[in-house]
Amino acid sequence: MQIRFLGTGAGDFLAPEEQENEAGFLPEVRRLGGRHRRYASSAMLPPDTLIDFYGDQQIRRLEIETASIQHLLITHGHWDHFQPLAIIDFARGLPQPLQIYGNDMVTDALEFAATHEWQETAKKFGPASSPADISTHSVAVGRSFDVGNAVVTAVHADHCIDKMRMVPEQKALNYVIERGGKRMFYGLDSSRPLPETVEQLRGFTFDLAVLDATFGPREIDPALSGHQNFAMLEQTVASLMELGVFTEATTIVGSHISLVNVPPHDEIVDELAQKGILLAFDGMTIDI
Image (cartoon, rainbow, N blue to C red; front, side):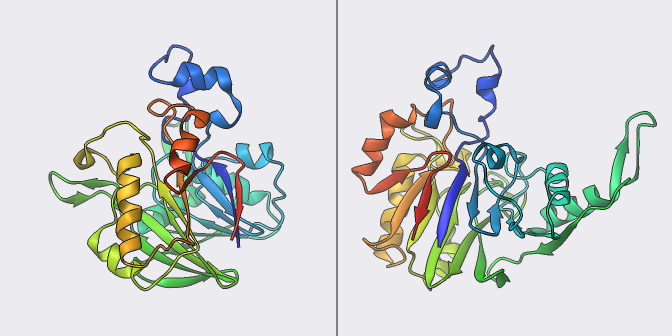
């Protein structure tokens, strides 16, 4: 199994385009360019599966052949991971219908976007003017399902949860992906694993784990964020190693990196490597 990182940025990935925004590390990131510049987090499992979709900019930039793409896993409905109209437009260019998997909010939004169109002149919704070549599949936490020749299991991420009122705003998902005798955990946009998620992961041992490292070396209050910094990332890895979910043979990757809050790639990659963690960058490919 192979994973190719199409984008490795957080929700501030567009901030460098706003010339008035000179906060944090943006000026240095903008000056350095290259792997320091990060696009919206998404990935591809060649030859046929995408994870999350903001747009096809990185697919085109990395010159990825799209004819074989058949499946799209959506982790949750936040704008930098999920753009219904862009997905529908992308699907129209494929030779087969795009099969899309996500929580109820995701599938409901896609079905609405596929059948409705905003009429700006009339200021109201009308029927869609052209059909959408998609098929949606609502995913239940804890259930396994086939995605091509892979078996995928959805687990609940600690994200989109109002911790003060204990209201989950939506069921953000992480995914266990099994293919060709290999096993991957895609765990972005999550703080420390929820208790039920830990119990679900106990049944697996992973060859590769992609984990949230949004805030890098910056100190954060875990109560106010559905993400992790490097310290929390280390704690998550250590706790799952104690359970045997991760082993010394597991490749650990940190991704979903804030451009505002985290130093450029080359300033932190060695620090993470010393802790046994790879720092992802746009275009990075890992074979397991």
